[in-house]
Length: 428
Image (tube, rainbow, N blue to C red; front, side, top):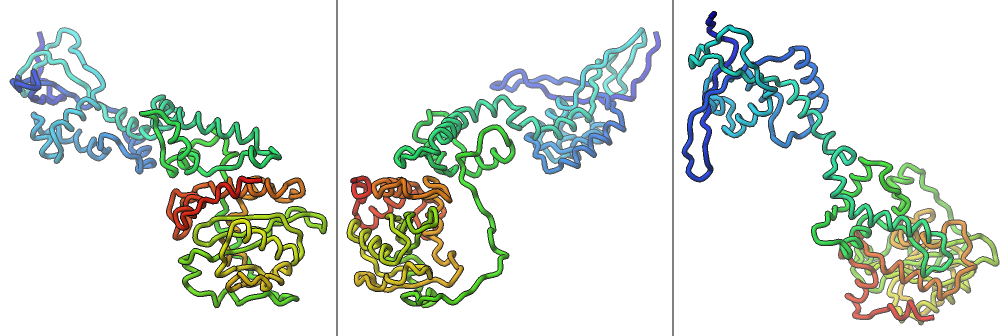
């Protein structure tokens, strides 16, 4: 029988423990052969380089694998390999298991003898780095929603709740009754509502996580209920200027004290009007908002100065408002506001500069959830308007300036003044 000294494989000496508690072990010698296709390896490395930002959960990189292949040819025990790789012995064993592509048995009558340990006819384990490098490259893909059943099960509760909200929104978004009309909701508000009904152990994502999930997995759920977000709208437009035909009451907004600009006072307000259909016979909404608490009020008025003056007086009387300062625009309907004696100081914005009273302009988008742009307000009564404003004031705010995150205007107003206006909004 032909006896050959086999030089192509490496003899590795490992210490294997029988039990966890006693740590009595015995020595085990395994034989490995590095065998791979160079072209496939180059292709796998190139593919990994294109996805180099992918994180491997085992923290084993391609460079470590290639270096490991070279090191095992020079050492015959795991400890020395771990020292040269500057890693633990556990990582080295994990590398052997990851690269192991199966055993190679002796063939024919030829007897092989290991040149290191003199063992006859050893079973050789084939080490191939190509499959493992491909596994690292595909790790991120295997963690996607469509590929991972575990991730799909994790998202079931929140997506089921979200789908119910979308279904209810699509069903009631055109409801003429302001009390039952469904409005759009931000992701943060949806998550807060989900926390109230979620079961113990359910996954509840953060708003940023939910937004990323919707971005990476388009088409899974409908986006109808989410409000439209405008980014950088109008920043490059040329500013328009004009001289108003009628002098606007009050001082320029540039003379407004810094305490008002920083929202430090409790009785500073902004006022504006919301137009439905343009015409003499069509009603408008006169809106008023507290700059500090974001508490909003509204009443139906006509488009003339007398009606606007009477509407503001009605709001002041109904809700017992104390107005130290009022910021308005240059509309001709505001020319008689200086006749109201209970208003402290009036400030007016520049022409075509609605951003200078951004609080009330931002609040108007909530009104458009109930009455779309271009729709008439004639079908509404003042009672309907007060119910709508109650729902708007019940929406929690999170990113407002100098505002406690997670409180609604009604809650913040009650915290500041110890007065609950809920009954005034809901009474007919």
